[in-house]
Every structure is written in C-alpha cells, then in structure tokens.
Image 1 (tube, rainbow, N blue to C red):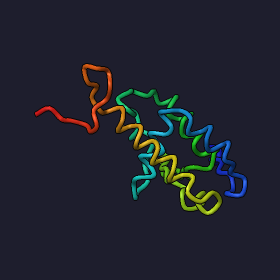
Image 2 (image 1 turned 135 degrees about the vertical axis):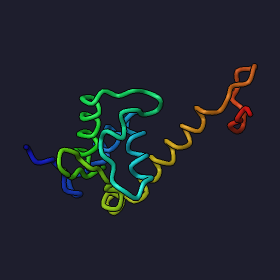
Image 3 (image 1 turned 60 degrees about the vertical axis):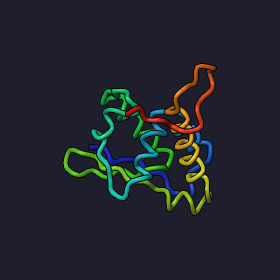
Length: 129
C-alpha cells in the first residue's frame, strides 16, 4: 500500500487551503473534523450536509484536504483515521483556519433559517413544535 502524502507545514499555501475548502462537501467535512477532539475514519462522512457521498468521491475529498495540509491521515488496519492539522497551520497562517470555519458555521446557520412570505430570512432559526 502506498504511503499517504502529507506536505510539510512550510509547503502549505493559502491557495491550496482555499482551493481545498472551496468545495461545500470538503469544508463541511473539515469543519466537523476541526470541531472534534478525536480522529474520524472516512466512512463516518458517507452522508454530509444531507447528501450521500460515494466512497470513491469521499476518498478524493480526503485526498484534497490531506494534500492541502489541512488533515493528517493515519492507516489503522484497513481504515484511515483523519485528524486536523489546525495547530500546525495556525502557526504558519494565524487565524486563517478559525476564520474559515467560523464563516462556514455562519453560512450553515443562515441556510437553516426559514424564509418569510416576503422572501427575507428570519432573524433566528425557528423550530416548529
């Protein structure tokens, strides 16, 4: 089995990070990994943002995140467990990852807010009970 490629933090570029996180599925995957204290295997993300993701596509998403320097993948048997490299990347580009993850969170919350009859979104998400 081929070893997984992880760029050194000195080789991580803003362009690579922004490109990797320009895909809505990848940014959702990355935000979930960042928000967790433990590693995640790829199969935990077969459904992302209410979409079913084929395993082959999921592998490509993880490869893009890994090669951009955003995650580290470690083989454990037949699974690859992924963890965030935020601490390393934050030393190189302070605040960049936090800003992107916060922007994704805000955008996700905006999408969940219901739309009024006048076409404008409400100020806060409302749950019908």
